[in-house]
Image (cartoon, rainbow, N blue to C red; front, side, top):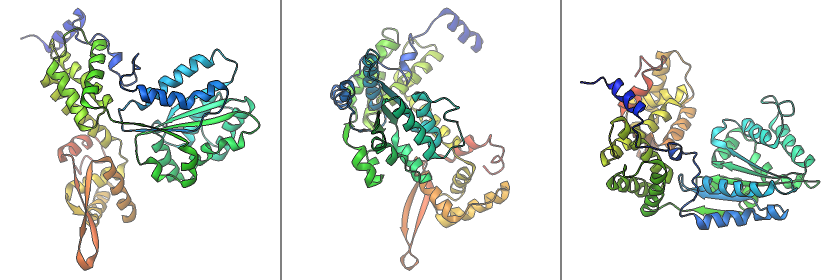
Length: 401
C-alpha cells in the first residue's frame, strides 16, 4: 500500500490536475464577460455617465441578495470610467471600500482618505474626532477640486456602525456637496445585500441617498448553469466536470437563493476534493461532500468570530436548549462564575440573543403565558457537537463545553 503523502506529492510533481486555472474560481476574480446582467450594467453606467460630461452624478443605491453580481457590475463600470478619465484633464477620483471589512467608522473614513491621497501625517490612523476626519476628507476634495465617487460596498454594515456610535456619517456623506460649493463634488454609490436597508435609515438620509436605484434580482437555475459552464471552461481541463455534477451545483445554488458566488465556491471545493482523491472528474458525490463542508466551515468561522460573552450565551442555550430568556440568563451567570468573568446585565444578554438570532445560529419563539405576559424561548439551529468542536480549543471555555 503506497504512502498517502508520497501519492499526493507524486501527483503534484507529475502535474496531474483537473484544475488548470485556480484564479478564476476565486471570489475576487473578474470574468471578461458578465452574463445575465446587461440591463443592470446599462442602468449603473447611465447613472454614473454625468461624471464623463464633467457633471456630478446623482447618488446611487444598488440592492440585491448576495451573489447576484452587484459588486462585479459596479466595479466593471467604475473600471471602464477610470480608463477613460485617465485620458482627460478633469480631476475624477473613483474610490471603493467595503464597510464589512472595517470594524469602526474611523477605520472606514481613513480607508477613503488614503485612497484620496491623504498620508498618515495629514490623517492619522487614530486620535481624531470623527467630525475632524470627515472635514479633512472634504478639504482634500475641495483643495484638489476633485470629483469623487465613493463606492461603499455592504453599506448596510456602515448603517449598523452609525446606529452603534450615533455618529451619522451617512447623513454627512449624502449632504457633503452643500459644503463643497467652492470646488469639487462627492457622489455616493451604496451597495447593499439588505433589500429593507432604506427602511432602517433616517428619513433625511433616504431622500438624498436613494436619488437613483438599481435592483438586482436573483439568478435562476438556468442562468447559474450558464455562469458555471463559462467558469468551468476557464478553470478546468476539458470533460473533467460531470454534467450531473454541474446540474446539482446549479440546482443547489439556484433553488436556495440564486447565489452565483456560492455556486462557484461549491464548484471550487468540489474540484479540490476530486483532485485530492485523484479523481479524473468532479462527480455528484464530490458536490455533496463539498456542500456539507462549506456549510460546516461557514458555521465554524461564524462561531469562532463571536466575542467571549456571546460564546457563553451560546453554551448557555446549548445546556438549556428550548429555554426562556430568564433561564438562559441564569445558565449564563453560572458559566461566568465557572470561568471567572463578570456577568453582563440581563438586558444586554436579551439584546445579545436578538443579535445572535440574526446570524441564524439560534431561533426564537414568542410564548404567551396568559396573565404572566410573554416570554421568548430560544433553541440552537446547529448541532451541539459543532459548538463543542469549535470551542474546545478555547482555553477559557474548555472546561464548560
